[in-house]
Image (tube, rainbow, N blue to C red; front, side, top):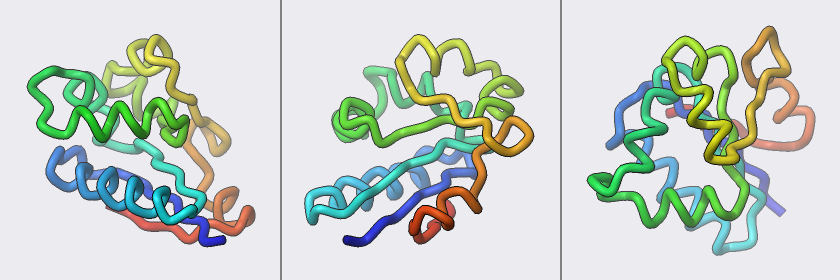
Amino acid sequence: MKKIAFFGFTGELMCFAHALFNADEMISRGWDVKVIIEGQSTKLIPVLESDQNPFKAIWLKLKDAGVISVCRACANKMGTLNEAAELGLEIDADLLGHPSISKYIGNGYEIVTI
């Protein structure tokens, strides 16, 4: 089984949406997929939850599937850590407060950055 971990860094909704689209497609193929919200992308958390988000349905689908995690350090810096926790998103902080890419690689995931 393929294992893919998307790391979203840029904070651009249109870029991050492609991680969501591809994650959803890969999950439908039976792949093991993770979406990690990192860097400036952590500021998108309230945007993704907004009714104005054109990608809200796919966001909610993946959030409900439990495949999304959030960088603690970056969410804290961007002011979205509390909201991420309230939404029940996994908070990842294995590497000095950030997600560890090597942890994912060590667990067999291919890494895709956006």
